[in-house]
Length: 510
Ligand SMILES: Cc1ncc(C[n+]2csc(CCOP(=O)(O)OP(=O)(O)O)c2C)c(N)n1
Image (cartoon, rainbow, N blue to C red):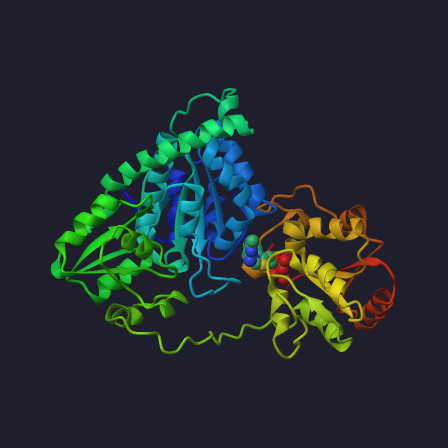
């Protein structure tokens, strides 16, 4: 008898990948994708890791796929930016065993620094993209993604959004089947991307796109649902669910494989309906393409490109109204009571520093009552902005802050750069011994793996010295007088200093 379980999109995707014979999975945490790896880590037969960052995760997982085992990489949308270098060329090398690139976008920025639409990456990298609209589809699509990957020798992008990743649905579970793979053999023309070989592979990539286009025309994932002929929607992802709730009788072309585009199917569907609408969240990805086919279609006003396309907005979208109020979201998260970051920022505020910030719980220190953080761009920029700001404002009291997980992710290179280029100043590593912002994941400096097994522990103070910092101090920010005195001392020195402000997160899960 088949078993059922109530699973989120992330969890269902993980179960689907497991049943499809996945062997290796790598990721760096990032909402709303984090639970994919956390779920996969519960299967003991899988090789699952938190990697130090997304580029590393992508390369380890791709390497495993090229060695002959089905592999998966998962990240949030901004994480894919970090992995873009290997991603672009992996489109040329292709794979041996199936390789799935899962990316979770965050429309409405529930937990992100921007709202980018990853669908464009599929065009840019010439890779196929699947877009499930529910947890059940996430499970089904990931299985199909492995098949497509192997059949067409390509990484396959599987894109979800927050609502699909975090919504729960009952899902049927199946057995795990591990397919036989061909042996890993030397193949320089395919795996050594020097210009001559890459030229040959680029020809392959263009031919592959044509074959994938043919697949997109016939796949059941691009599905026509005939209904009322007066109104026809072309849509994908969670927008499909919202539209179905609002306009259950209309005709639909529901796209599950959104790239390459299924032009013939789109044209055929357009002919059957009186008024054609394209409804999609964020950018006009489908709209621009459908218009380029010479088809007349109605699409949302550009004001709806910002934020989520929530169910209650559907009638306004269809009527072509302008979103009158583009309100900034007023959620005001705060640091937890007794969070160790409070203590560090109390000092930085008191001393009236310009604080180059970074991404983590400590970003919340930009809000009252501390209001002591002055930038947040991307992971690692707390270290590099300290260096950059000093160039134009040498008279200001500038420092940089970075979390422990973020420092390992992408702060190390910035510190080496500062030392090499003779930069000065104080960098604070806010070491709460966890990746708190995303729910408390392990990283190299915690000395524990994703399964909480002991491993080699990265000693941050040794690392900072090796990077070239002149002074490295480790101190508990809750020892306020001592902490203040140390900061005053270091800020007045002509040196590159790192202060590791160490106190464990109150919510630390062991
Ligand atoms: C490229 C990228 N990957 C992942 C994330 C998600 N994310 C934001 S901050 C963060 C790490 C936070 O940990 P840490 O630096 O230790 O700070 P803490 O939250 O513990 O204070 C992560 C994983 C992101 N914003 N950007």
